[in-house]
Length: 260
Ligand SMILES: Nc1ncnc2c1ncn2[C@@H]1O[C@H](COP(=O)(O)OP(=O)(O)O)[C@@H](O)[C@H]1O
Ligand SMILES: [Mg+2]
Image (cartoon, rainbow, N blue to C red; front, side, top):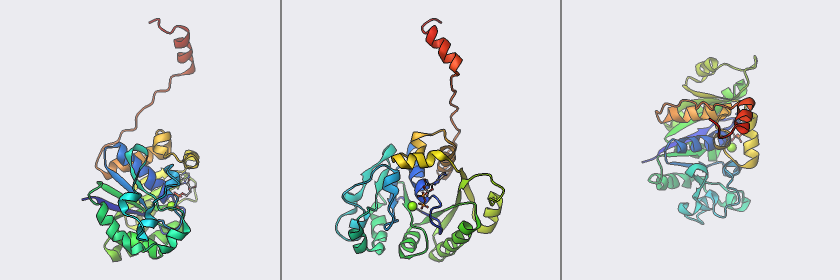
């Protein structure tokens, strides 16, 4: 039986898709079988971040009753199974979000963790995703508008009996104007699962459709996400120390290569 986790936020653009995609890859790297499903059926972009765009059968087709869920599962980076939402407006118009419950139960034997990349806001699609999942992770930014919207999501999750695992604070910059982790924890009254810094490599990777935890595993955002993934599955993660050879060392090695 898989553990289903909705990745939600309230406010748009906090980093739900980035976190869902990279958490999925990180969990998979640690040996967990993961499915990541794009429940943002109107603004699908998980497939772009995962480099899987242009798939013919998507979640919208399944929700519209035109395909089976098995037809919409694709193998993505690091062996993660991905269910893209698709960008066809036609399929989206016919999609029935209520079918998500049925779909999730069909997926339960296919993985250990199912991550659901939710739409922003508290519209019908977001509510369906939050109520369908057993657990929820909030992705917030360290600013008051993001936190106040997250409070609404917390209230909704409680109403649906969806267990809140905690919040990930994304895009921190250490600026004075930012809310501290402690303040966010106090306001939201949920555990802080991790803090992911603002990292220019995130955008770079999104542009090329490559998850940052694979392309730049040593980058600060990757390190934070790997740590959160390890924590979720009760694993200890020690950042690997990559010892960079100095130029001089490389130069000498090049000159005297072979001589010990
Ligand atoms: N830690 C980060 N550092 C820098 N940019 C980020 C970070 N997290 C997300 N972003 C960028 O912020 C934008 C919104 O992220 P996205 O994951 O699409 O948010 P959401 O799914 O919540 O709408 C994207 O351009 C993404 O590349
Ligand atoms: Mg998104």
